[in-house]
Image (cartoon, rainbow over all chains, first blue to last red):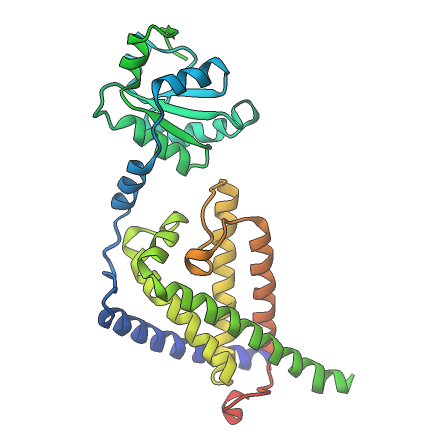
Length: 163
Length: 151
C-alpha cells in the first residue's frame, strides 16, 4: 500500500518537475526583468559588498582605541606587519579570514568593533579582509582607509614583530 | 477507531494541504517578484556553485506555486506532497549547515521580506516537512476539484 503510493508520488512529482522547469524558463525568457540562467557572478556581488563596507576616520578610530573598544586588523602581508603595525593589531590577510573568524567570535572580542587597514588610499586588502571577516560571521567591521600611513604620521602607538 | 480513520485523517490532510498551499503561494509570489534578489539570497547560503544559482532562482519559485496549485485543486497531490517534503528537507539541511557555520544571513524563505536565519526557522521547517509527509501518505482526496484523479 505504502509502496504503491510512493511509486505514484514519484511518478507524479517527475511530471510536475518537468512541467515546472518549462514554465519557469519560458516565463523568465519572456519577462523584461528575466535573468541569465547561468550568468550569476559571485565576484560582482562580493565587489559591490566590499564597496559598501563603512569607513571610519582616524580620530574616531583612535578614540575607540583609547576606550579599548576596537580590534585592529592589519590586512597587509606578514613582512610589512613585522616591520611595524598598530599596537595590538592582528595580521589577517584576506585569504586567512576564515581561519581567524572562529577566534574572533569568542568572548574576548565579542562586541568589539573590527577595524581593518592596509597602506595607501587605493589598497584593496583592508576592504577584502573586512568583507571576508563579516561574511564569516566575525562581527561588525569598518575600514580605516590608508590606515597605516595615517596612524604612523599621527604618532599613535605602534609595535614591531609577529603577533 | 473507524471514525478516526474515515474522518479525522482525511480532514487533517485537507487542512494540511491548504496550510502548505497558502505558504507556498506566498513564498513563490514574493520570490518571483525579484529573481535577481532571490539569486543573491541563494548565493548567501554559500552552498551552490555560481552556475546553479540563477537557474534555481528561476525554477524554485515556480515549483512552489505549481505545487501549491496541485495541493489546492487535488491534482497530483501525492506528487506535490513528495516535492514539498523534498524541498523542506533541503531547506532544513541548508539552514542547519549555515546555523552551524554561524552565518548571519537572510533566510530568503519569503523573498526580500524574510528575517535572518535562526533555530526557530528550522523548527518551522521541520513541522512543515512532517505535515507534507502526512499528506503524501494519508491524503484521501477530500475537497479535490478533480476527485477521481487523486486517489
